[in-house]
Image (cartoon, rainbow, N blue to C red; front, side, top):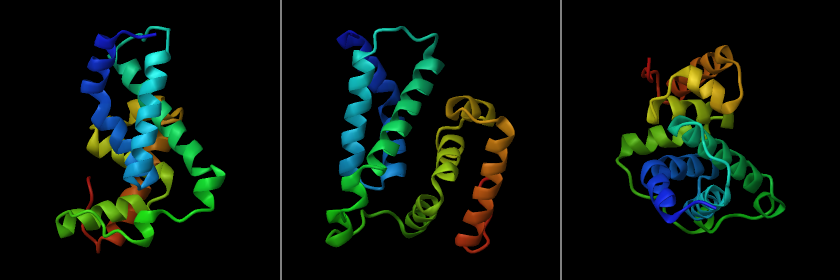
Length: 161
């Protein structure tokens, strides 16, 4: 089990990244918060040391993605409508930001992941490929396809490149 100091350091360094990944996958603040807690609980209970800070961050991202997938394929999630869908107004963002976020969230999961890691976290394709367990060329292809879809969705504006 990890010490309180290690947990505090990990939360300070990686909390934002893990929270965003959870929200991008689950599109719901409550579920994202639940998975966020689960990820850091797994971190606390992990006994083996990490090779480096990069390995630690990649591990947290991988655990977050897998936990989100587990939530999405759960029976409850597939057979229930969220309260936010039924009653709540969308959270307030500037109009253009909201449009971009909606377009990114509408992408298939594999494209959302690479777009987020590349543009929001600043990761190169080689790191994304290692973290997701995919071929580097696959990541480049997904980035290209995601950019094209975003360009179509957002009315022809260039995204990223």
